[in-house]
Image 1 (cartoon, one colour):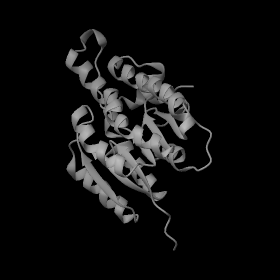
Image 2 (cartoon, helix red, strand yellow; image 1 turned 90 degrees about the vertical axis):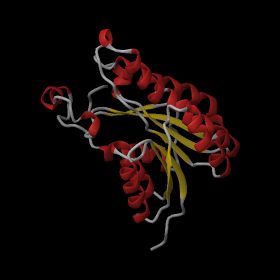
Image 3 (cartoon, rainbow, N blue to C red; image 1 turned 90 degrees about the horizontal axis):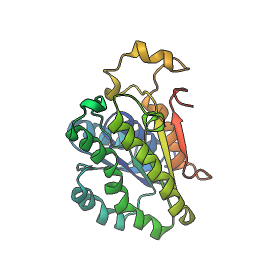
Length: 244
């Protein structure tokens, strides 16, 4: 069997859930991987083994995306020497609370990871991509960033901020053959939503089920791997009709 020529993808937050599914789907499409994670070494090693089982290489990068200096140290020199063909920003945390009770720590933690993390991880790779005049950037936002969600003012603010950032960046770099888009998942079966009251949420979703991580990964893969594309600065919802 002829081996597919390899490309390189950086998946920020690629060790579990949606990030893991994205990493594996990109590996199936012929990408070698750089996968970042912050804590779960076992999960990261499992992704690495799964990618390598698909015949692709996988380098694990451990750092906190909220730490500007750590992200810069991990990515700047590496990306300058070997420019990723695709970058997926998937890092995110949730610390839900009604705004009236929300602490400054809950606000800061979510904004620092979900929104500032975008700057910390994309900024080191954007100049090399501009230099090469090529690349795909896909940012994972959320339905909460499109329509808001009670109890998630911090999370909705960060995810909405990502949408604005992508639309502006897409205008800046589109002429350099760099396409920047958002994928906005709805309720996806991952650890992050395990605590949610499924019986209350399902009636709100027209297709009457939660999504699967692989369904998000399929759209991300299309935006990263499809050669002939005319999609830039767009928000693609993967939510079963929860937001239209």
